[in-house]
Amino acid sequence: MERQRLPNRRLCLTETLEWCEHTWLMNVGFDVDGRVREVFIDGNKVGSLFEGLLDDACVLVSHLLQIGRTPADLVRRLGGSEAEPASPIGLVARQLARLEADAGVIVREVYALAGQRGAAE
Image (cartoon, rainbow, N blue to C red):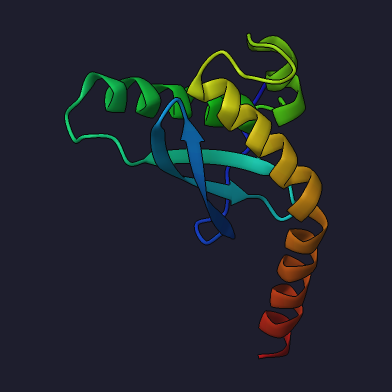
């Protein structure tokens, strides 16, 4: 599968994640169709093993999203129970699926309005 390139300027949402007494900021980038295409997590101690693991995991998740996998695909394939994900990455996948479902239509509309405004200028 070929990787979908993202626009240089894109809509992003930031959300707080909590898992096992850890708190992070999750930044989520959307494409013009309202699909989640990238994720970044911040909030770990700089230079820590946990920071490195989550950074690498976010690169892999973002790559999977950009080659056509959906957040729902990731949720189905990652471990954990229905009530509790097995890892912070499982939590990220669940949040991405929720955000895509809840905000995808709005993101598409915002991109459409921005495109109309740009065409009128």
